[in-house]
Length: 304
Image (tube, rainbow, N blue to C red; front, top):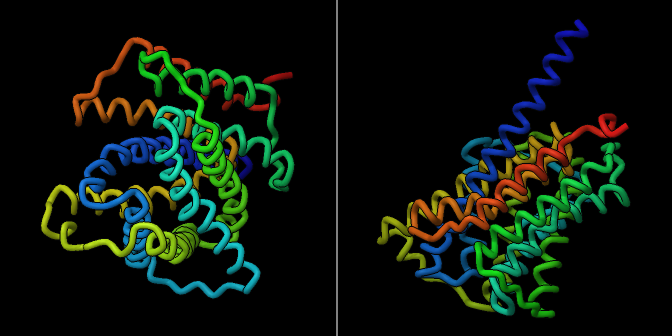
């Protein structure tokens, strides 16, 4: 019985890693597909378009109502803001004030911010050894090399960089908040509620900034329609749900370590789809990211 239980726990952890890797592959691809939607919509308008479609997709996948105590409902509003509407709003706004490389590098700090918040506020009991911090330093160095991609120039822009840092902090807060509810409720139903509040809080942001979008191009341009379907159904609905499952099985710190690989996935997809250049520097960066994630995944007891 003990061996069977241990085997089941190991299998669940393995699947947690599989879910995290699959999600990063999809999320890394989303940046390329977002470029297609940007031909007809602003960065702010894309947010409710993605969240709304994700909500509908998750309702179709799990047509089950969820009655929540008012305290939990308030927390889901906060989760929808931190992991949905405001996270993407801040990230997209940062791009208007600073360089894309700056945003990519600063947002990649979210795993280490998650570590700090987990130590300060989380009661999940995740044990963090020194390798988490060593791995973070190695992986962030790799992210810098991948994002710069051989162009060794990094210019600080205080306002834009601070907004990007706020986006990274939003994701770290989301990661800490969501874990409790993935253990209490069905993951797909939880994710659906998050998408609902992300949509409802993103809508006024869109109306106040860029206005109501014209939906006609979505249904008359095949590439735009396919991009929207991929981003909403896979990028948001499916991947947020299985990422939350990974949170439950691996913990938020271990799962978020995979975020370091996202810039390199974007680089590879850009090379394959958009014929963008990959330099030796970015390959070295990818190796550092891989090494950093491996180091960070070492168990605390192995450090003794």
